[in-house]
Image (cartoon, rainbow, N blue to C red):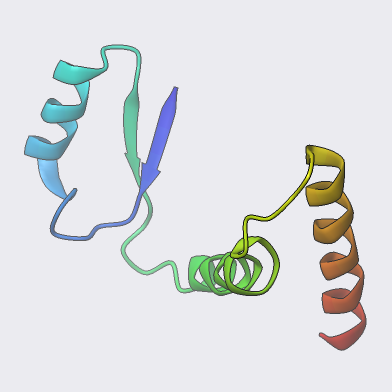
Length: 80
């Protein structure tokens, strides 16, 4: 399993890699490039999904979650 992280101080460096490997031997920590501003766009998108789509957590089943995510995707793509 790959665990993708940025270079934040809480998980940067070899010490973090070693801690993860010690607790989860099948996990490999992968750091994103230091200058990867395009990743911020992904974080912004998923932040919006979290705030606007799934925050309420009042879904009756996974089909309802899928429908709401699909509707958000359609709206986002039209407005972007």
